[in-house]
Image (cartoon, rainbow, N blue to C red):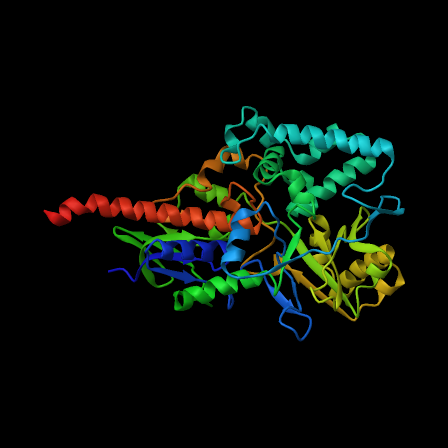
Length: 459
């Protein structure tokens, strides 16, 4: 006897989207979440008295080409507002020189701009030749998967600033160092999202924020699912039986594991997973990110004609945004510590880390930035049910050796999570797509099973 038709492990965006799709398809579903909250790698933090006075210490942005999440936001009655980008942005070069600029591209030495432009154009041409649904089928997949992005940058870019800028884009978008990732995965990421869209604010992935914070998406979905969602219920094992699965004390026909591969691999499966899937989970580590915010009485940089958007090659806070809530107070500067910087400063005392971040803000925005009224940070590598952010990143050689196992069900066990998406992997949109795809697999399989069983039941 089954307690439900399907169990979903994980109440992040992907798991909740899967549960919602299953329920819409007529399935009885239960969601089991290890944390005492929903939202996964999204988390709101209040910075004022009004409901909209929140900042997100996890994922936060949505963009116009992310159709799955934008459609869901509209369906849930959630409002968005534009990321503040009015005014000039700042670029701090490797020598510490600070320049203002308008538009997308900083003002640099013409030789550097040409160098970066050639590398960028070459990369985009290469990305067009890749199918994001099956990167391992690229005719040059083995070579590309065995070559690190760091190797490619060294061979392609001729100037120091060009190389450092390309490396910075990898840290910003994927939260790893270029030496930790293969060219095949970088090409996949661009093919699955559009590289310019990944980097841009206006018209791109950072265009809009959510009134009330991005965790609101998960909170609204969970509210609709009601008592089908159970919190503080970590699943340590999944046991496949003749008539279904047992997970977290629940019996069901099928289960969707809506977790990053690195976390999915910590579950004990009986019988053991096929070797390809087990090996895959060991080769998709999470990125390293610490999200940091300084609070001020007002966004004073706007009075100076600045957007609050800044890029600093010296860092360690290399990318900065104006993260002020929609009502305009408090003023918030937000920055990421990513890759190597996140690992080094993550092991340092909090005061040292704060000083490094505030020091970057002061270099960029002046002495007023040196004295914030508050400071917030979140180290996602220290989260036991995340172990990193923004997403899992396959190590070199993983796509070609084990990529086919990423989405392929193992009997009644199905896989979701943004890491399994074929578009906007690592983003809200990819998480939702992946959850809906896994739900579709379950509904199709159960429909087929019911059809197959019908003659015997009638006989």
